[in-house]
Length: 377
Image (cartoon, rainbow, N blue to C red):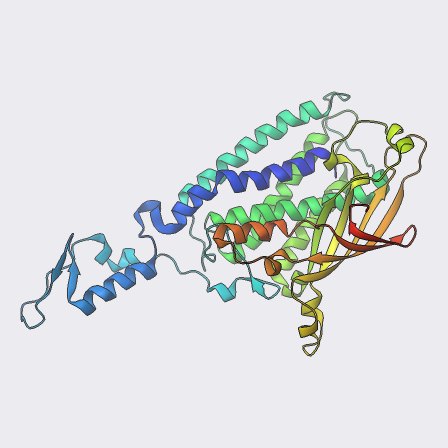
């Protein structure tokens, strides 16, 4: 995956973490559009008032239950039942991923039916506009060796031993995840967010690919776009076919382990996120869920298995790129880490998209054991 794609994905995630939580939290707590904080709280207040013979009229007053005259009408908006109940949400157990609870930025499950929340929608819309502006500027800075020109196509299938295409697939999946979380925070239902999340993720990836098409040394690569579509499509499939939630794409980055000769042979300076010698793409399997029930107690939910692949000696003068293949233990952070509160739980769910250092067995090009791959100890 090229630098600008992964960098922009990180920007999306950071933007969601930094720009939206405060606004979304206020709105989700019922501060938007005059809606009470929570219907359950309102119902509790109303019930308590009746049980104790109290009625809310700006201040508490005791009702004479023996009086034959009717009690005064409730005068505050709290008493208006049409405004007490926010749209119904899914029960927590209805919003899951591979058998464990799925978290949202607000800490509440999605609405059963789409109910747009104004403030989060404006916040995310503003963040998206700022992101598009930043990408446009960044594309200019990223292509110092290229000039703008007419839109054209250019296919580079073999770059990085084809792992650039896998990188695009992960990019499409990750962009879809970020878009999905944004739509949930804006009030979309589970089913609507499952559809519009991948559409938004694919639009984001395609926006970048189209800009590539206007640079003389690059071009719109339809094989890159196929990777984008595959990643977004798989995210959608996971939302509709629960069994696929047991198989998650992940990404990792670490030191290259190159010797001095290889370091000197590098053709151009690259940042970590643009250096395929440092990257691996993974498919992580929730093995606990796939075992027979009588064997599940022997395999913890937080421990997974992952198969990872990458390319090495990419863009090194005088060296031929080759592929690497690893089998590694992996972690399910949602199951491993304790309850961290609504925002913390949502954050650890997002960090599950990364493969963290773990024991691994390299299977190709030669077999060897790595204690905490991708670190070479």
